[in-house]
Image (cartoon, rainbow, N blue to C red):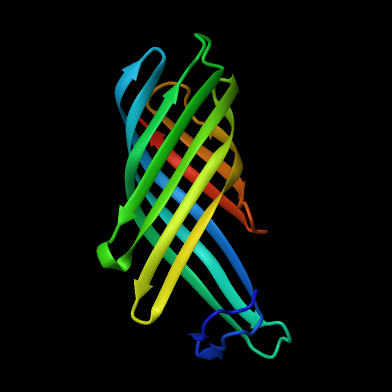
Length: 193
């Protein structure tokens, strides 16, 4: 993509009109607690308290390879939000759900992570989930800024240590961002109560 305005990344200037290749590799690790404050036989609504830990690398280079800069980053982000799940059948093998978590930091920026999904649980301790996920991250510090909007389908596998409530569960997710070649991988550990 050609740069529309001149900017500096890791001390290297990139000028307007210059072709710049961008690589972003991000892993998101999630750990959290879910408390279901409204429960019925057909579903629940719960409160989420999580930490999303970003471990990544951003790389910018010109098309000729003369200018090449990389920055590694590791950032923990505390988030709060809501989760819901509804079971259309009494067997609870199939469910529909969603969650939205985020952090608002005033003029510094914001982070939102939301999804809607369908889950199939062939066994009480295993869940296969597919859905659509949106990640919106915007931040600013001094002259540096970040504006990242990813959205697209995802697939996830979850294993739970116990089948009742409370339960300790771990999952691994892979998501494809629409309109780019970006692949987002995340892992989560949650205590459901």
